[in-house]
Length: 140
Image 1 (cartoon, rainbow, N blue to C red):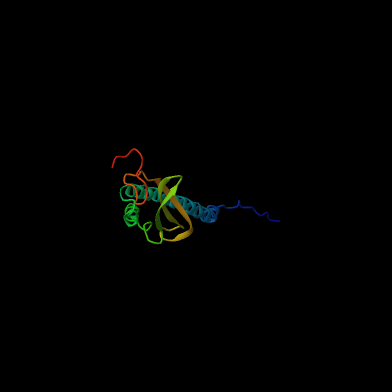
Image 2 (image 1 turned 135 degrees about the vertical axis):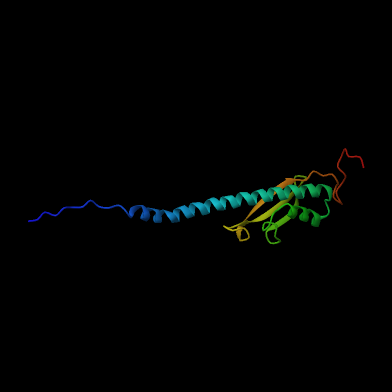
């Protein structure tokens, strides 16, 4: 009886198979990192737009078009679009705030999701809005 020699098993394709199995997980991790980056950028633009809107609102408190224009000037496309960015002046506890709300992009800038990110900045009144009393301690 002839004895058969057993050859050791060869692992030559295992690395390729393991890499192919890991590719979807690596792509998912990359997509999550990218989405977190988009959240950070959107938050930064909302905060910056609110700061610029508050600055403009302190000088021209009754001109909402100029306040909105100034906020949009400081935000890069596509975050500055009409359907993406909204600017408003809100009053809370006797203090005025500029609020900029941006639609949160999903995976690609320009593709808006159902979420919004809001930035607020306090308006330091230099010129009182029409219809409000003069601040105390200010000489006309």
